[in-house]
Amino acid sequence: MEFTSEIKKATNSIYQKISKTMPEIEWSVHAPYIYEINKLKKEKNAVILAHNYQTPEIYHGISDFSADSLALAIEAAKTKAEIIVMCGVHFMAETAKLMSPNKKVLLPDLKAGCSLSSSITGADVRELKRKNPGVPVVSYVNTSADVKAETDVCCTSANAVKIVNSLGVKKVIFLPDDYLAKYVASQTDVEIISWRGTCEVHEQFTDTEIYEIRKNNPDIKVIAHPECPPEVIKASDFAGSTSGMIKYVRDNQPKKVMMVTECSMSDNIQIDNPNVEFIRPCNLCPHMKRITLPKILDCLKNETNEIIMSKDIIEKARKSVERMAAIGR
Ligand code: 13P
Ligand code: SF4
Image (cartoon, rainbow, N blue to C red):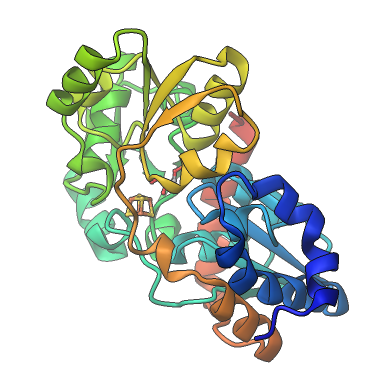
């Protein structure tokens, strides 16, 4: 696609925002797609939702709403658009569909999965319930709709502890993230039965690398996602969801910070926090990175890659997300 002077002019205000993190040569490749996508989404009454791990040209260039998975789920339900394009992974698109069953939900690459979500099936949850009769199931939002349909209440990393405590029971089945389960267990008296799922991105971080960084940067703040191993959380100054981490940087304005999470996050928020120096441990989520501007344009133009689910699963799974939304953050 050609980077014409008309496109340059029309997209200049977006480029001014991200110019410090993106050279002009790279922008000239993205801008024609950004221009077309923004035009098309108006024509089609579509809304573009982007997870915080999307690349800056998506996050700043075309998204109407960027957030963590809880806020994306809530926003999906509120939007009046006829089409939702989810720039994120499959379970996020499914969650958007659950919350907006009458809208067309498109995922630019249907192969954008998640190691947590694929670690467990609906049949696995039924087996867990059979083995633990009467124990409520709390599922992390990083699960398929089939798993959510077997779940009493969903949670995200932002509200997991609150959800578990709100149930007023002594024991819960908490799945699928074993590390998040351990984190929750450290913050509550409720007994947690966990599953063996892990995030393939966050499990790569180690406390040794944090101690090494601290040695050379004594005043650095280290903030980690709760999907990290427990010893990494212990070695950090703060743990929170992606939006929680963004808020921490915005509110505290540390001189230097290391975000122990997917590395596009640092690129995205550097722009709004010019006085903060980001030390980037670069672990990319291969699933999130499947979403690109050409794929977004193609799926919006042709309305392909639609998320289709049975009414029964939609109804059952939605209840678990609605219960979470009612309990709130
Ligand atoms: P958040 O809910 O914190 O955005 O996390 C989603 C995710 O996939 C993290 O790996
Ligand atoms: Fe799943 Fe981890 Fe990727 Fe998030 S970062 S989508 S939890 S694999």
